[in-house]
Length: 185
Image 1: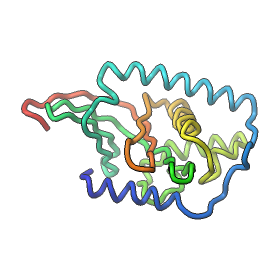
Image 2: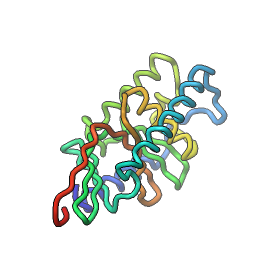
Image 3: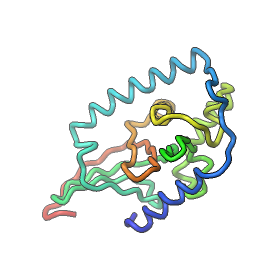
Image 4: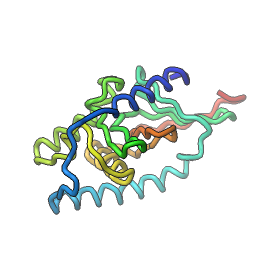
């Protein structure tokens, strides 16, 4: 995806997060089992993230999401590239501290919503409002927990949070392929 398309995606994600929305009640309690699942998911994601440092996750100069191909690609000027399959889980706006699930975001291609929809289905099956409410107020830590849960439920290898503006997009990934092209990308 070239930078203008990426900018359009991010602006669309930000716009979709604005306005009134159904929210989980402030201080809404979750079941003990669900909280344990979230805690386990976050711990597992921490272990996975540490393991990804070996191939450079978080140290690449560029990243791109290609919604048509369903990939997340990291690259460096020296030609090193890491290509993964990707799923967009949701976005967190630092402007209003809101989480918006990808399954209700029209700027996300349907094929990149599959894992977010699996999380929603899990929420419907278990009566977990936070997983079935399109938008709710929370913290970035809550957003990481939702992405970690998606990674666990959908057998993803990791999560990437885009480092852009006031809206962070949370993307799960798997099937990592590292390559190096002589002379750069």
